[in-house]
Length: 339
Picture 1 (cartoon, helix red, strand yellow):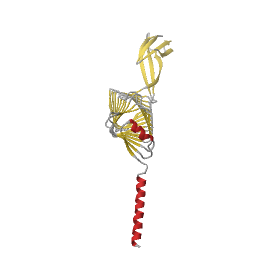
Picture 2 (cartoon, rainbow, N blue to C red):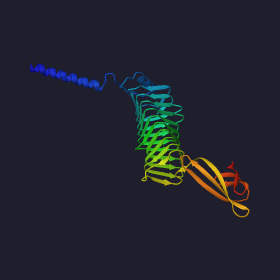
Picture 3 (cartoon, one colour):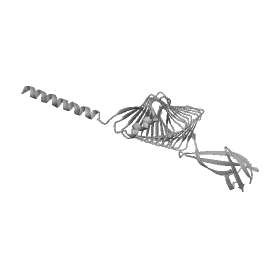
Picture 4 (cartoon, rainbow, N blue to C red):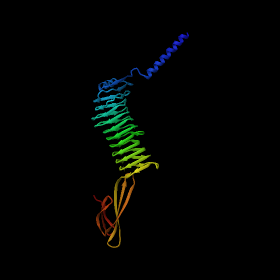
């Protein structure tokens, strides 16, 4: 009786253990290696949820042409020592982890709609394009020489060199890494960065750039149509920051350093004139230029000069040329800008 009860307990434990194993490792899950494009295509065509495909030991590079899709629930890991070149179209719905080297070349495209992680080397070259509409994590080295289009989330923990064009419509988080821009970045989303170097590049910001550590603008151009929030250190050496929008803000503890930090760009200007009658045959002409800036403020500058009574002429005042026609000593017959 005791023996029967003991065997029943053992059998129940074994059934429970097998149930746990089945839950943690589905019977239909598989892990396969691919060393050629043909093997990769074959593995992807039959892949099921939970499968893992490892690109390893590529003999003489791997040229991906045509269309290649990583299905949802499938993970591809690239750890090949040779380069994997993307000349065709790779679409990711599952997950792609790069531990080796990938280059997008010759109008090739990677479209990430699942998860893409780079732990080593990832380059966009020669008319290539990377389109991200889900999650992209970089802890290796990423070089963009053509187009990187982000519509969701890009997190950089190491190094991004941009010499092409980055379009951001989502979120870029650069907390533990370094972004070095020598190309063009067009930001329509949120760009939060701990270390950013804009060296001879162009940044067009239409929404929010938030600096939380160090932002260095050297020989670069930053056009602000939205807002730049500086909470730390912003250095600007031989660079240009043009404010067309909400401006540059930050706490009193933030440090601004450099020359010609902010150019408050004017939206338009108006001109007016008045005459002060003096004794003799000359009067005092005062030309007033009112410049309206994109941040809502205005700058008023007066330019006084001596003129003959009832004079008419064109005058150089600041960066403008103004035509003024006077009569009756103090009357203004005409006043307007001239080319």
